Structures are given as C-alpha cells and as structure tokens.
Amino acid sequence: MAEVINMPRLSDTMEEGTLAKWFFKVGDSVNEGDILAEIETDKATMEFESFHEGELLHIGIKEGDTAPVDSIIAIIGKKGEDISSLIKAPKPKSVKEPEVVKEPEVVKEPEVVKEPEVVKEPEVVEEPEVVEDPEISTKPNNGKVLISPLANKLAIEQGIDLTQVKGTGDNGRIVKRDIENYKPAAFVNTNKMIIATEESSYDLPNSTMRKSIAKRLSESKFTAPHYYLTVEFEMDNIISFRKQYINTQNIKISFNDIIAKAVALSLVKNPKVNSRWHDDKIQISEHVHLGVAVAVEDGLVVPVVKFASSKDMSQINKEVKDFAERAKNKKLKPSEIEGSTFTISNLGMFGIESFTSIINQPNSAILSIGSIIEKPIVKDGEVVVGNTMKLSLACDHRAVDGATGSLFLKTLKEYIENPVSILI
Image (cartoon, rainbow, N blue to C red):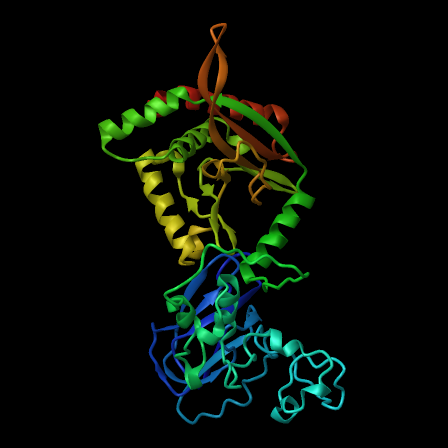
C-alpha cells in the first residue's frame, strides 16, 4: 500500500517548510534510510530521511515551494499503484508561479503571461511586469531563462546577471548549484559605483526563517514586559587572563567563551534568572542550557550549549565554533537549537559599544554584550587608561524582578573582573 509522506514538523515553532532540494525524481526507487530531500524550516535547512521503501510515485511540492506542516510532499508505493485517492492536499504556496489566470480575456492585471501568442504582441500588455522577473525574462536570442525559485532568490541577493549563467538542470534550467558555482567574467570594474538617478527598488521574498523570526520576536516584545539593566565592567584583568590561559594551556579561547562560562556560573548562583514564565507558575531550571545568538544570512539562530556550567572554556569554544559554522550552512539539528534556559548575544566584534536585545522566549532574560573600549577610567583616585565593556540584561518582569536581575549582574561582575575565580 502506498505511503503518504507529509511535511514534517522539524522544530517546535515550525508552521511551514520550504522544499529546498529533491534527491529523487518520480519513478526512482527509494530505500528506507535514503535522504529524500532538504527542507528549509524556520531555523535551519535539514535533510529529510525516508522511513519507507518503494517507488517514488508522486512529488507534491516542487523545489523552492513552501507548504504548511502535514501537507503532502510525496507518495511512495509499488510501481503502477493507483494513488489518485491519496492526492488530496491543496496546492502549496509557490514563489515560482502566481495563481493561474482562469479568465485570459481579462488583461488589466497580467501578473504572468503564459501563452506565447500574447508575447508576440506586447502592445496588448499595459503593464509589462513580466520583464522584471528573471525567471521569465528573455536572453538576447529571445529564449526564456528557466530558473528555480531558490536559484532566482540567490541570484537577486548576489546581483548576478542571469543571462551570463549556464543552467545545468532539465532543459537548461538554472538551479541552485549554477548560482553557487557561477564565476563572473575575468574583468570586473570595481572602481565605479552604480548610483541610481531614478527611484528604484527590488523585493526579496521572506524566507521561512525570516518570517518565523518576525513572528516570534513580535510575540516576545509585545507579550513579555521587558526592562533593561546596563552595567560597565573593567576588562583589564580578563584581557591578561585570556593571554595567560592561551599561553599556558595552548588553547585559543575568545572573550565570548570566558563570558559565556562566567554567565553560566552566575546563573547557578542566581537560578531565578534562569527561569520560564507560565501563567500558573515560574519554572526555575537548575541546569544551564546557554543559547548563543549566531548571525546567518537570513537572520539569526540560537544554538544551545547544553549544561554550559559544567563545561570548561575550551569545550564551550569548540561547540560555539562548530555551531556557528554549521549555522551558516543551515546544517544545525533541531535538538541543537531548542531547550535554552538563557541567551547571550554579542555584537562587540562589530564595534557596537552597547545595545539591548529582545528576549528569546521562553527564556526570561537575555544578555547583550558590547565591545571592549579603551578609555580613561578612574582607579584609586587617579585617571588612567583602561579597558571597559558594557553589558545590558533584558528581563521579563513577570519572572525576574529588578533586584533579582541586579544580583545576577553583581555576581557576573565578580567573575569578569576577577576571572581566576572562574577556574576555582
């Protein structure tokens, strides 16, 4: 009997997914354990494994299409099996083609002109928006440029001229790998900037991740009563500590690794900050699962260092580096981006002196880390040159009171300004 494959829920917040890539086509034999496709969720792009074997009888979602969780993406069964009764799902949302125009005689809003005879007489089309779409724009020889939606998106983002790209897909279709492997002509004039003299703009379709970020942050900002506590720590001791640690342990660690460890230890001493708000209770976690915000092309992901308080700085360094690399390639697993109890976000490497963040719910707080600034400071009644760093703690006032957040920052200050205590 044929088996229906539905769009899986690959994360706790996933509502829809985008089919990034198919590894099989209709008629291919599929074995249990084969990787059927890559699916882009609200947090990452993940490989989707087949739990059935047989022939791939039907593909319900094309590459680049988006569909809600539980909608049919494929059907696997025996060769020649009748599956007409199983195909019931509505057509998924597609970034490739708009809805079919059922009444061709109405040409006032021709979003897409699909019939070749209409193209022969362009004077009929009052608003030739079609030319702006790289997927159906024409080459110098008047041949159509066939391109997948995902490749189209990448080309727009990278400013690639599609007429210069050779497609390797079916019928010369340009696919993702063609954009990734494209190399511009040998001569590129980089000394001139294109300065617009007329009003112009272009649209970037919102990815599944971008839409999820917008939804979750809006919910957090408007449901959790945020307040902010900002402090400034002296960093001279931690600068010396890092140099000594690298020299003696022969292990390179970053300031972020030291701060992450100090935060984890401070949460152990101030568990009320390491909490979650529920309508009938406040859940306080004794373990520390530290979320570390990582910037990616489509937005932001928060991989989680599990049991961070029990790990040393070199272990934290190794995990965060691995997470950051795989986050950029959208290869994080669902289990690696869920379950955080507290989050840190560091923009110091971009020269940001101080900032505030929106709480990564269901956490009750998030720490924003700025850059280390060299400036005059007062020590023992004298003005000297020193290094400082500003940190801002955003708290959900429902779970974390001002005094509770202040005590956490006081503990963190002791660890940061006396970093040897981290090792004790």
